[in-house]
Image (cartoon, rainbow, N blue to C red; front, side):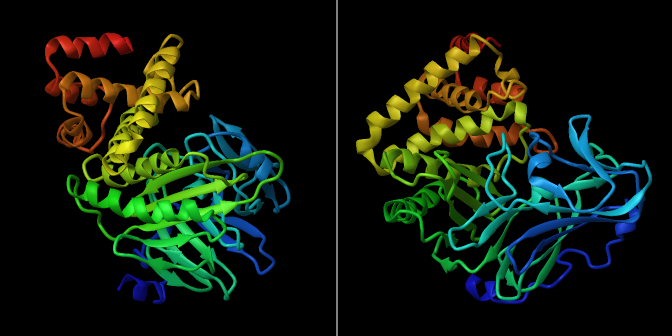
Length: 417
């Protein structure tokens, strides 16, 4: 059983113990949770560097939430990326930050910490990716260590350990659990679910997600392994509340913060269905850039509606209203920006709405919601670039296969293409 693997000791150096870190002067990133529940991160270089630059800087929140412990350093933007320098301009081999281990909503990115109500934490490794000197466009390998108090469990890549783990990371990173929340295993996933979440929320999750996974697995390639499912809750000050979900390879995670109530059960199921769809999309498509996020977000929105109606036929009117709202919101945004400009103007919600509207039109004009839900995504994989990348041109080329020329031109006009 996988749970037996979870109880095994995770070996340090998961991928290549003899990897020569000095070859490209890859930074060693040491993340530490101390016994007093404080967190810090230290970046170490084998040779002196003039700066350390973070690979992904979606906003300025690091300047508020990461406090320099090391003396004599400055922290500022350089070419749009958070960058650390010595104030006197000299080289250095290490720098340490104290971290704020609470949840923060980042634009089109995952927070470094998603806390559980019992003090456990889900950590996102990608938030800690940094480069020696400056980040190159082709830099995609990171070496990290994570240390935690001996009485807390570290779960990385489906394996459990205590004290310390080390690993090489890539792409968007992964989620790593630290704490003692109960871990359970079902036929479909291994779950770490916060007991502070409302019973209605948990029961809906445990009922719907297995059904949705069976439905998706019947049409999409099987997952590489049984995924980890993380569902966490963190209290917030004031009136701030919300939720965020996401998917990484073999991981699905959801975080709620602030007020906890299930006002509309169909909206909750839609949220679950959207994330389950993302879990299976990677079987055909490897990469979609943020500017084209409407392709996968819109597909997840459309399939969410189809799954909802499949298992809850009484939710049809809810789905129809959601789709009508997506159409209206999309048209309003298209009056201001082109779809390709949404991300640059941080109109991230419009990526979902216009993406959903795109698939709604394809389903209407092709006469088959099922083909657009499944066969269209297969077509994207077949027409993707050699590296598995998909963009607008690929999406439109596949759309053209499902539509008459007249209806294809109608779609182009609707989106101003």
